[in-house]
Amino acid sequence: MNRSLDVRETIPRHKFRATPEAETRVLLLIDGFSHKPRGIGRCLEGRVKLAKLDFLLRYPKHLSRVLEKLGVEIQRPELLDTDAPLDSRMMRYKYGPWDPSYYAVLGSLIGRGLVRVEPLESANGLGYSTTAIGADLSESLRDDESFYVIDSRIKLLRRHLDKSGSTLKKYLYELPEVADSTWHEELT
Image 1 (spheres, one colour):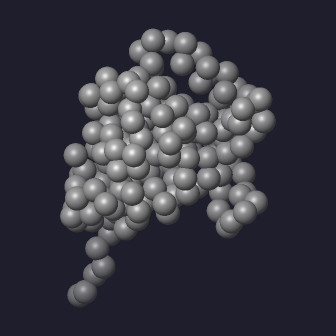
Image 2 (cartoon, rainbow, N blue to C red; image 1 turned 60 degrees about the horizontal axis):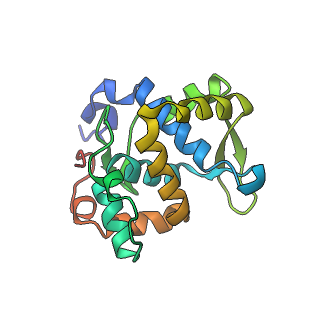
Image 3 (spheres, rainbow, N blue to C red; image 1 turned 135 degrees about the vertical axis):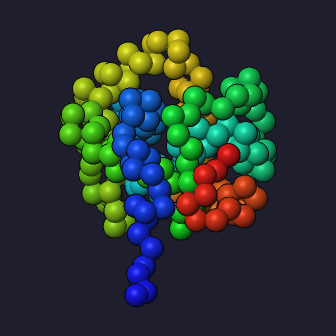
């Protein structure tokens, strides 16, 4: 019998579960991309963009290389010295780095009223933004010094890499660790 390979058979079940660390990081990332100057709302455009930004947030050595390639001079190199605490490694999927827990993480944040989903005006797809409750929680998390490095990296991402998901994917495929990895391989 020729049976197609089911992703659930190759990836341990626990990789699909949301963790408090992942929920916090994704909430802060969505919030960081949910506001324009002067408080006007916007959203983080799509899961592809979310995944690529999250990869760069979690793997600062790759963020540093992407920024260098773009000619961005890092004013605070200590922000990129160490990896963010990783509750799990991302995996290589068809469109680059992906975390199997994104659906659970987003479902949890949306279900608790911290993040809202909205259709994108300029394209087919969905965007993510924080609700008032999610924005307030994000602000209180940013006030906690234990989130200083992650928040600073999110600001760096927003300033220099607020690009489309496909543009970010292109940048990541220029990294040999991503381009040369096989599907479902954990990225380092």
